[in-house]
Image (cartoon, rainbow, N blue to C red; front, side, top):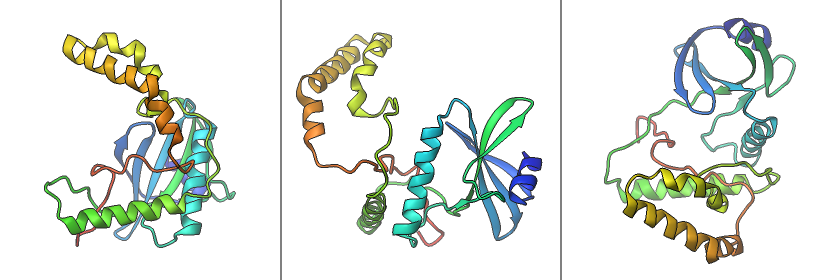
Length: 204
Protein backbone atom coordinates (compact mmCIF):
# COMPACT_ATOMS: atom_id res chain seq x y z
CA UNK A 1 0.00 0.00 0.00
CA UNK A 2 2.89 2.37 0.74
CA UNK A 3 4.00 2.08 -2.88
CA UNK A 4 0.50 2.70 -4.19
CA UNK A 5 0.12 5.80 -2.00
CA UNK A 6 3.47 7.14 -3.22
CA UNK A 7 2.75 6.44 -6.89
CA UNK A 8 -0.91 7.43 -7.00
CA UNK A 9 -1.07 10.21 -4.39
CA UNK A 10 2.54 11.34 -3.79
CA UNK A 11 2.02 10.51 -0.12
CA UNK A 12 4.30 8.76 2.32
CA UNK A 13 4.31 8.30 6.09
CA UNK A 14 3.45 5.79 8.79
CA UNK A 15 0.32 3.68 8.39
CA UNK A 16 -1.68 2.60 11.46
CA UNK A 17 -4.77 0.44 11.16
CA UNK A 18 -7.61 2.19 12.97
CA UNK A 19 -10.81 0.36 12.05
CA UNK A 20 -12.33 -2.49 10.13
CA UNK A 21 -15.88 -3.08 8.98
CA UNK A 22 -16.69 -2.94 5.29
CA UNK A 23 -13.26 -1.45 4.47
CA UNK A 24 -9.77 -1.70 5.85
CA UNK A 25 -9.10 1.75 7.30
CA UNK A 26 -5.72 3.25 8.17
CA UNK A 27 -4.39 6.55 9.44
CA UNK A 28 -1.42 7.85 7.47
CA UNK A 29 0.77 10.06 9.64
CA UNK A 30 3.22 12.29 7.79
CA UNK A 31 3.90 14.91 10.48
CA UNK A 32 2.32 15.91 13.82
CA UNK A 33 -0.26 18.07 12.05
CA UNK A 34 -0.45 16.19 8.74
CA UNK A 35 -2.54 13.02 8.74
CA UNK A 36 -4.86 11.33 6.26
CA UNK A 37 -7.32 8.45 6.29
CA UNK A 38 -6.74 5.63 3.81
CA UNK A 39 -9.68 3.38 2.97
CA UNK A 40 -9.09 0.09 1.16
CA UNK A 41 -12.27 -1.44 -0.25
CA UNK A 42 -12.46 -5.04 -1.54
CA UNK A 43 -14.03 -5.84 -4.89
CA UNK A 44 -17.06 -7.17 -3.00
CA UNK A 45 -17.94 -3.52 -2.27
CA UNK A 46 -19.84 -2.39 -5.35
CA UNK A 47 -18.77 0.52 -7.51
CA UNK A 48 -22.22 2.03 -6.95
CA UNK A 49 -21.71 1.98 -3.17
CA UNK A 50 -18.35 3.78 -3.40
CA UNK A 51 -19.76 6.27 -5.90
CA UNK A 52 -22.63 7.07 -3.53
CA UNK A 53 -20.27 7.61 -0.59
CA UNK A 54 -18.08 9.91 -2.67
CA UNK A 55 -21.07 11.80 -4.07
CA UNK A 56 -22.33 12.39 -0.53
CA UNK A 57 -18.96 13.77 0.61
CA UNK A 58 -18.70 16.03 -2.46
CA UNK A 59 -22.25 17.29 -1.87
CA UNK A 60 -21.47 18.15 1.75
CA UNK A 61 -18.25 19.92 0.76
CA UNK A 62 -20.22 22.03 -1.73
CA UNK A 63 -23.38 22.73 0.27
CA UNK A 64 -21.92 23.02 3.79
CA UNK A 65 -18.14 23.42 3.65
CA UNK A 66 -18.00 24.29 7.37
CA UNK A 67 -19.36 20.90 8.41
CA UNK A 68 -16.63 18.80 10.07
CA UNK A 69 -16.69 15.78 7.77
CA UNK A 70 -13.86 14.17 5.78
CA UNK A 71 -12.90 15.58 2.40
CA UNK A 72 -11.81 13.36 -0.48
CA UNK A 73 -8.24 13.80 -1.70
CA UNK A 74 -8.04 13.15 -5.43
CA UNK A 75 -5.21 11.04 -6.77
CA UNK A 76 -2.53 12.49 -9.03
CA UNK A 77 -4.74 11.49 -11.97
CA UNK A 78 -7.70 13.32 -10.45
CA UNK A 79 -9.61 10.21 -9.40
CA UNK A 80 -11.66 9.75 -6.23
CA UNK A 81 -10.95 6.00 -6.32
CA UNK A 82 -7.83 4.19 -7.49
CA UNK A 83 -7.85 0.48 -8.35
CA UNK A 84 -4.84 -1.37 -6.96
CA UNK A 85 -3.66 -4.80 -8.12
CA UNK A 86 -1.73 -6.67 -5.43
CA UNK A 87 -0.76 -10.26 -4.68
CA UNK A 88 -3.88 -10.58 -2.53
CA UNK A 89 -6.14 -9.39 -5.35
CA UNK A 90 -7.63 -6.17 -6.66
CA UNK A 91 -8.70 -3.41 -4.28
CA UNK A 92 -10.00 0.16 -4.46
CA UNK A 93 -8.07 2.85 -2.64
CA UNK A 94 -9.39 6.20 -1.37
CA UNK A 95 -7.68 8.92 0.65
CA UNK A 96 -9.63 11.33 2.87
CA UNK A 97 -8.77 14.10 5.27
CA UNK A 98 -8.29 13.06 8.90
CA UNK A 99 -10.55 14.51 11.59
CA UNK A 100 -9.04 14.48 15.09
CA UNK A 101 -11.34 13.77 17.99
CA UNK A 102 -12.83 10.95 20.00
CA UNK A 103 -16.30 9.51 20.59
CA UNK A 104 -18.01 10.39 23.85
CA UNK A 105 -19.60 7.37 25.44
CA UNK A 106 -20.34 8.64 28.93
CA UNK A 107 -23.93 9.25 29.95
CA UNK A 108 -25.97 11.18 30.76
CA UNK A 109 -25.02 13.71 28.13
CA UNK A 110 -25.73 17.38 28.88
CA UNK A 111 -28.76 18.88 27.14
CA UNK A 112 -26.51 21.39 25.35
CA UNK A 113 -24.46 18.52 23.90
CA UNK A 114 -27.56 16.72 22.67
CA UNK A 115 -28.83 19.93 21.08
CA UNK A 116 -25.48 20.45 19.34
CA UNK A 117 -25.55 16.89 18.00
CA UNK A 118 -29.09 17.43 16.72
CA UNK A 119 -28.18 20.70 14.98
CA UNK A 120 -25.16 19.09 13.34
CA UNK A 121 -27.23 16.16 12.11
CA UNK A 122 -29.84 18.55 10.69
CA UNK A 123 -27.11 20.45 8.81
CA UNK A 124 -25.73 17.17 7.50
CA UNK A 125 -29.12 15.99 6.30
CA UNK A 126 -29.74 19.32 4.58
CA UNK A 127 -26.36 19.17 2.83
CA UNK A 128 -27.30 15.76 1.38
CA UNK A 129 -30.60 16.94 -0.09
CA UNK A 130 -29.37 17.09 -3.71
CA UNK A 131 -27.58 13.73 -3.78
CA UNK A 132 -29.11 11.46 -6.42
CA UNK A 133 -31.21 8.56 -5.11
CA UNK A 134 -29.03 5.52 -4.48
CA UNK A 135 -29.60 2.08 -5.93
CA UNK A 136 -31.06 -0.36 -3.41
CA UNK A 137 -28.41 -1.82 -1.12
CA UNK A 138 -29.30 -4.92 0.94
CA UNK A 139 -28.66 -3.38 4.37
CA UNK A 140 -29.96 -5.60 7.15
CA UNK A 141 -30.71 -2.61 9.39
CA UNK A 142 -32.89 -0.89 6.76
CA UNK A 143 -36.48 -1.39 7.97
CA UNK A 144 -37.72 -1.20 4.38
CA UNK A 145 -36.04 -4.55 3.78
CA UNK A 146 -37.33 -6.17 6.98
CA UNK A 147 -38.63 -9.19 5.09
CA UNK A 148 -35.06 -10.32 4.38
CA UNK A 149 -34.65 -10.95 8.12
CA UNK A 150 -37.30 -13.70 8.12
CA UNK A 151 -34.90 -16.59 7.41
CA UNK A 152 -32.70 -15.50 10.33
CA UNK A 153 -35.42 -15.57 13.01
CA UNK A 154 -35.14 -19.34 13.47
CA UNK A 155 -31.59 -18.88 14.75
CA UNK A 156 -32.79 -17.02 17.87
CA UNK A 157 -32.44 -19.59 20.64
CA UNK A 158 -34.85 -18.04 23.15
CA UNK A 159 -38.44 -18.85 22.12
CA UNK A 160 -39.91 -15.72 23.76
CA UNK A 161 -37.47 -13.46 21.93
CA UNK A 162 -38.11 -15.38 18.71
CA UNK A 163 -41.88 -14.78 19.04
CA UNK A 164 -41.26 -11.11 19.78
CA UNK A 165 -39.19 -10.70 16.61
CA UNK A 166 -41.82 -12.60 14.64
CA UNK A 167 -44.54 -10.28 15.94
CA UNK A 168 -42.56 -7.14 15.07
CA UNK A 169 -41.81 -8.36 11.54
CA UNK A 170 -45.44 -9.34 11.07
CA UNK A 171 -46.60 -5.88 12.10
CA UNK A 172 -44.11 -4.27 9.75
CA UNK A 173 -45.26 -6.44 6.88
CA UNK A 174 -48.93 -5.87 7.72
CA UNK A 175 -48.97 -2.07 7.71
CA UNK A 176 -45.76 -0.68 9.23
CA UNK A 177 -43.83 -0.52 5.98
CA UNK A 178 -46.71 1.24 4.23
CA UNK A 179 -46.62 3.91 6.95
CA UNK A 180 -42.86 4.27 6.62
CA UNK A 181 -43.11 4.76 2.86
CA UNK A 182 -45.83 7.38 3.38
CA UNK A 183 -43.53 9.57 5.48
CA UNK A 184 -41.75 12.49 3.80
CA UNK A 185 -38.08 11.69 3.41
CA UNK A 186 -35.07 12.66 1.42
CA UNK A 187 -33.32 10.03 -0.69
CA UNK A 188 -30.03 10.02 1.20
CA UNK A 189 -29.73 10.42 4.95
CA UNK A 190 -26.99 9.60 7.44
CA UNK A 191 -28.86 7.12 9.61
CA UNK A 192 -26.06 5.94 11.92
CA UNK A 193 -25.51 9.11 13.93
CA UNK A 194 -24.73 7.39 17.23
CA UNK A 195 -22.08 8.02 19.94
CA UNK A 196 -19.67 5.57 18.29
CA UNK A 197 -19.71 7.57 15.06
CA UNK A 198 -19.68 11.15 16.37
CA UNK A 199 -16.29 12.70 17.18
CA UNK A 200 -15.77 15.44 19.76
CA UNK A 201 -12.77 17.72 19.91
CA UNK A 202 -10.81 18.31 23.12
CA UNK A 203 -13.21 21.09 24.13
CA UNK A 204 -16.16 18.74 23.80
